[in-house]
Length: 182
Image (cartoon, rainbow, N blue to C red):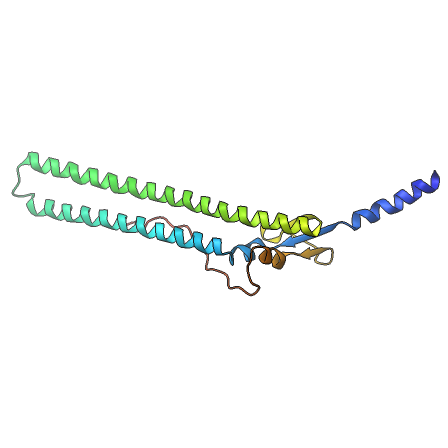
């Protein structure tokens, strides 16, 4: 019995050391994912559409303001009040449009990045399961230290699982931006 207990005390810690741990750099992977590039392009296209609409509304406001300024000396007060009210309503519409655009862009960006993260997470799980890893850490998440002698870098394996060739160039990161104020 004593020998069995000693054997367990020796074998148990050794079995803990036999477990495999891995790590990845998610930023490095995401930047070369075709889904990320497509998400960026879709986001930038939508952002441009919102900016174009904002610019169109701004030009409409400026045109109506100029017409108002030119005609204000020759029009009756009732017509001037209606035009002023129309200008105020248009300005309110422009401001609401800008806020809605910004919120919609944020929602679209979060949804698209969520889809990219789901694809990445599935690939990480598949690589982890296939390799028998207990844990796969992400160095991009701010983990202060990961022993590179006790953990294996699985970044290239996850890229391969996603069908990404080694040495692929990262896409330029898209920064979320609000429509430009004019």
